[in-house]
Structure formats: structure tokens, C-alpha cells
Amino acid sequence: MVSDIHNLVESGKVQNGKLVYLETVPIPFLQFATLVEGEWLDRYVMVLAEVGAMLADKGYQIQETNDNHPLAWTHFIDESGKGIDRKEIQILLIRADQHLKKFPRKTKEIDGRYYINFGDYCCWRGRKLKDDLSSCTSEGFMTEPSEADDLVVKHFLQTLAEIALAVASRKGKDKGIKQ
Image (cartoon, rainbow, N blue to C red; front, side):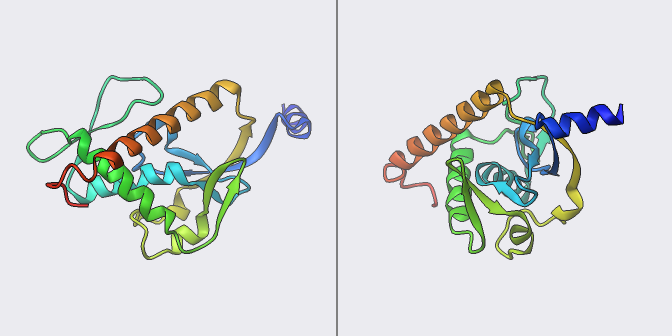
């Protein structure tokens, strides 16, 4: 069995990899984030992680659901049991995105996607995730992403971008919302 694993690694179908578990990502499918080249975190996944951290800071808690869709959002409820308003989530997505666009340390573009350096993020005083993320990493094997994986992520990111654009276009119309 060990020789079979070595053969898979040598063939390139499987490679050594490193993951970080980001508990605050509100989409369980994306909570185990790949550290590309062992050090780069997808900025869009980190936007979601920061949104989850902001919700926790506001006192929201996760409510279990039976939705098993890979991109299903976790439901958040406040102390009274009331769920969070979608508009507030959209605003938090924009804030987190703007916040990470200003990340003052190493960033990198890989295949048209933006990444931030994991070690630098862990040391950044401005980060929303205050946990010791270095203790949330694990090593193992990763397969090459399939076309289906790429389509799922591309669909999610497209939807996220559409939400951000919709909220940004209404930004001037909603005077009662603090930006």
C-alpha cells in the first residue's frame, strides 16, 4: 500500500499538501482551506472566514441545519433565536473583502486568483480571526482538483461577486445602513 501511495505521488495525481481548518467559514465545504505551495490562502475563502468571525463578534451563533448542499451557508442566530438579515451578511461580505484588499503583507496571484500569505496573516494585527491558526493546520495528500470542483468554486465566486456588486450599487440608496 505504501508503494502505491508513492506511485500516486510520483505520477502527479496526488501531491503532498497542507490544509488549515477555518472554523468561521460559513460554508462547511470550504472550511478546510488548502495552503497552496504550503503558504498561500485563497483570499475569497478568507473573506468568508472573516465574515464568520465578525458574526461571532456580534454575538451570533451557528444553528444546525439539514441542508447538505456543498455550498449551503450556515445559519446564524442571535440570542433571541432570530436569524441574521441577508442584507447584513452582504454588507459584511463587502467589508471583509475591502479589509483583505488592504492586507499590508505578502499577496500573490495564482492562475487569476488572489492569495494572502498564511504566516503573514497569522501575524497581522488587523485580522478578524484571532485564534491560533497555526495550530489548525494539517498535512496530508491532495488530489488535483477535478473540473467539477473548479465549476463549484467558480459558481460560488461568481455568486459572491454578484452579491457584492448588487450591494455596492445600492450603497448610495440605503442611507440608513452604516458603512
